[in-house]
Length: 263
Image 1: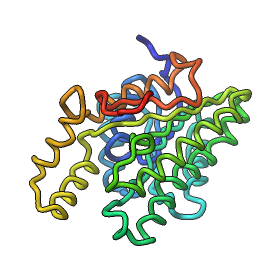
Image 2 (image 1 turned 180 degrees about the horizontal axis):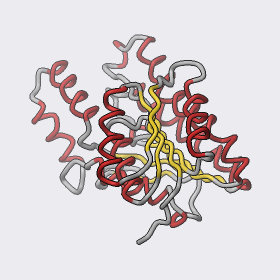
Image 3 (image 1 turned 90 degrees about the horizontal axis):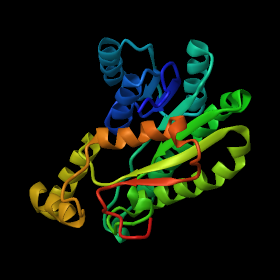
Image 4 (image 1 turned 30 degrees about the horizontal axis):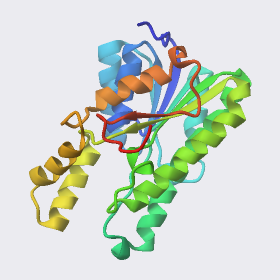
């Protein structure tokens, strides 16, 4: 299927690793030109070089920390300066810590809300002026299943994710009349650098092997395996396109059946 993304301008926040990087590669393969934003300049440089070599797309990079005041606006301004418009935003920002509830300090909760929640909110808010002028735009926020199915050891993440899903649903009503759609993708357990770091921490805290911990997760996934970043990226591309033209305010689960609640 031709998704009609050739020549579109996509901003990808959190675009240097994991789901953001996989989405960048997929969008480039569909013909989109990109603005990649993340904190790590070296990672951005490597990925932009790979995209330019493999797909011949125009790629701009912005090193920015969405905890910083004005960072989101700087990313959006760089996209407008380079390309003159913003057709798509993919926001895959932040991660949150966890632990046993009564041992989690305030700082962990504050960090979860500051970056995972507010970082994504700031990025969405920053691209809306351009999209409202254009009377068209597509926004996809990569959130996570803990917002629907909380895990007792990742409650800061669950809280930030649930808050994001609420904002996405409410905002979709606000901007639908202006030709702007916003949807969420909720990955289940997937093979990313972040996942590997999380497993290592769990192993250290619990004294169990990473293999044993991962077995617990795969047993809970009806498909019996972890997802791959590119599998999530395919859904991101679909939601970025007019093929999903009648979807807004939706939360798409890409989790091998892991979610136990009604979709």
